[in-house]
Length: 316
Ligand SMILES: *[C@@H]1O[C@H](CO)[C@@H](O)[C@H](O)[C@H]1NC(C)=O
Ligand SMILES: *[C@@H]1O[C@H](CO)[C@@H](O)[C@H](O)[C@H]1NC(C)=O
Ligand SMILES: *[C@@H]1O[C@H](CO)[C@@H](O)[C@H](O)[C@H]1NC(C)=O
Ligand SMILES: *[C@@H]1O[C@H](CO)[C@@H](O)[C@H](O)[C@H]1NC(C)=O
Image 1: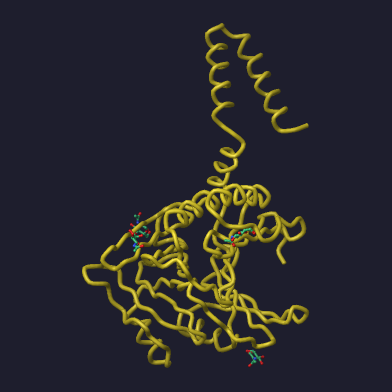
Image 2 (image 1 turned 120 degrees about the vertical axis):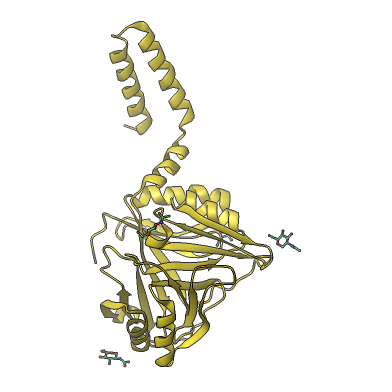
């Protein structure tokens, strides 16, 4: 029995019930039902469902050349905790999951070190992670004192109010330290370079159900950014910062930043929505939806990978 048939049966039933009432009510209901069945196509329903799905950022995966060195750097300098750590000998890598709180409620980083020790090429497409701190000046001084590399001193931009700094981890990954009031999600940002800002925003809104929280265009400095995420208060959640540098459309993906994972109540419907939006805006499903892992992977229009993980998936 297909969904359309069921829907028609419900409509017929509703009409039958309503028609035992006075004629005018029956007639109006009939009109409204006809109207709604014309207006809502299956693809509209799918995209509307995406907006209501139960999602958050789960984790981002990056490759590192020396797991212990990176763990030391993130725990000492950023205050992250090691949540779990393990070896996967049959796939020849070790990993550690680090974060500011338990994985079931926080966005976390998964660091992977391959046994082979292949060379890490960071590429130019992935830009940086953001860490929220209540005192960026103090964090910078402490990182400097431990020998860390500061690439931008703490302070606002001219005329701005947000205090921020940039530091580099031992592999060269950039971290923006953003001064903010206390937040439940200190691992608060990942910035990606895109070649067309408006279509990237549309993709993240329509295919992934994120909200556009902020947009900023600076013709003087030749760039534009947009912040998208789940939730409404930028300082309390994790966001993706999409950045368009004027007239730059070619970036290299490298092999450092791997992917970001997001959860969903239904990986099949999520994959169908991504497929639908990809036909219009670009992007590709690369794996699944897989009935065993209950995940699907896809590339956004700029080639960044996202994994959608079903909430019904059993914990590993
Ligand atoms: C990394 O640290 C763990 C425990 O802290 C230690 O057992 C392991 O030998 C270290 N690995 C390397 C390659 O130094
Ligand atoms: C965001 O949350 C912070 C902390 O709760 C609060 O101080 C701030 O006013 C909120 N901003 C907006 C725009 O609601
Ligand atoms: C450079 O980018 C800006 C903003 O996207 C655009 O308006 C302009 O036409 C571009 N210039 C060239 C030479 O492509
Ligand atoms: C998606 O796949 C199509 C066909 O295989 C290809 O032309 C396109 O470049 C791919 N897009 C991305 C973002 O990889």
